[in-house]
Length: 219
Image 1: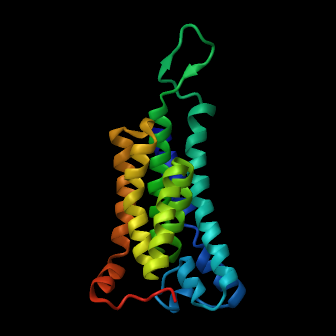
Image 2: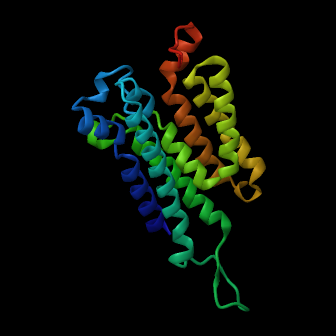
Image 3: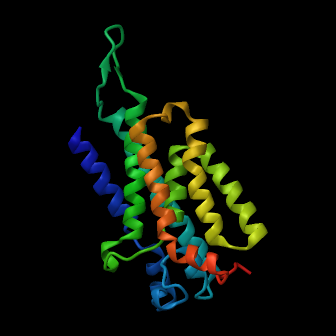
């Protein structure tokens, strides 16, 4: 079991570490996105290079790597036959649903860490929002819809993308807990809660600017 946990963690981290924003801007514009705006490699900063198309592509690809990482983790219990309790009256192995959620949550936090601290860019990366959306959508899609709805509402009212991201990240674990009873497991909720906390902490500079009243607005 330890081997499986390590494989999921390493695979997810490596997927998360692919710096799509940096690569797309470098390939199609010949620029280093880290020298633009906030210096971030995420979609919001890619948009500041003047290419909305590349920003959209970055957003989708970053979300995709989160979704794929969790999808791989969820595939493991069913296809590698990790037993929890054999059923004497069945020909299949009964797999504890908590195991699937634990692997998925583990993949989620490591794909986010990979995006935030990509080794290919000196362990500097993005804030993990898009990667988290993809990962969380694979883990608890209905809870993600709640977070996205609040994100859109807050951004529409305040025009602060960072504030919407922070609130969306904070709300997701709560929504997942209430909507998905099978996820009410200490290990699962701890991993998901820590993932959300990482995203919030990663916005520390935005939080300071929000408090000071000089955060950049979307328009």
